[in-house]
Length: 464
Image 1 (cartoon, helix red, strand yellow):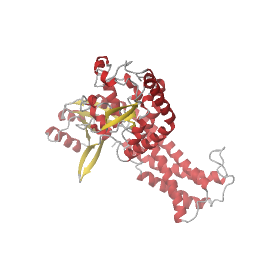
Image 2 (cartoon, helix red, strand yellow):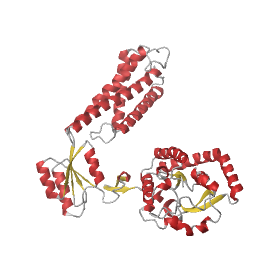
Image 3 (spheres, one colour):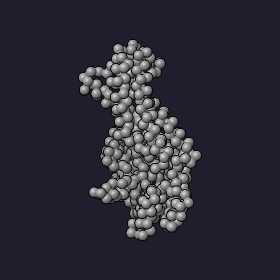
Image 4 (tube, helix red, strand yellow):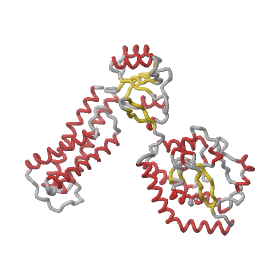
């Protein structure tokens, strides 16, 4: 470990102590002087009766600051190796401040069996601790980054192996100020020569083989010369964020999860679909009724078109409900129009200005109103509000094994591909976006896609 890492890691402890203790003392002064933290917002009109400063310092400020430091340590904020990004660190500080506030209230209410002597002081102290700790850690981080940009404290990284380092990894090493990339060498002899000329902090092995003498020699050399050893996973290198380390007994294993949409994420997503889908159905019911009446009057029955699509995992079949936008015999005429498909780069069948579309259907498609009945599919659990679009069984039969990865999650009404071009995308681009969603799912991503869908639909881009 670099000495600068140790220095800045240790420096955070006394700085946090000073920031938290200073915040508690400043909050006391504010209440003693009857001053509010925000001048135009009055928390209490009059300062309450406060204990003497000596009593406050000895019996509250010092123990409370110590408790805050202990919470920070338990939460991993004093690791000498900086693994958290600045925004994640700020988020963790906010959470720690909230937990600290809850513990103080619980201590006075449950142990002391009395209320805290000033609610305004406690709220101001919590806000001040959060602000000051974030401020001093930001200053430390900026100072550390300035030194790293000057080359002080940067880790020297050398890659080796029969395979070249992937371009994306190499670019990340070059851009990250924490590292200084020394280049790529072929084998152990070249690693030894490089280390004799300049100290190596981390060796990145591109093609490890546990049974080869070369790999054994490299790992032994790194151990005996105090060099960090890392390797690229031989599989799943395109989804590193889905890899995790766990143990079977004492043996470490590298585990891959197909998607983060599991556990509580799956519960949240289904609950969100059920609630929002039901709300949208109720709100949009007059529009649904009006569209159904319009189709009935202009082109007769049936009002709805039921299409069989492939569901989650690629094993189930779902009946997708849409307003009918084409003539009644559209399926029979499909084979004769396949030569007009503009999606010849993949298995999907799409025709611009499809001659089978009715005048009302053309309007419904432009504004994506034909897909509103799929809200019922969402409520019934066939679809999700957000996910890869479901395709026809005959189209899915032409998928490659890699393309079938989109079935890891439940298909959706809208998705990352739909807000990124819709029908204007070619098939490989659509699959790539869908896989990016599957492997990088988050609740925030779902909300962002729903929000963007509104503007994409209003713009009418790629609707045909």
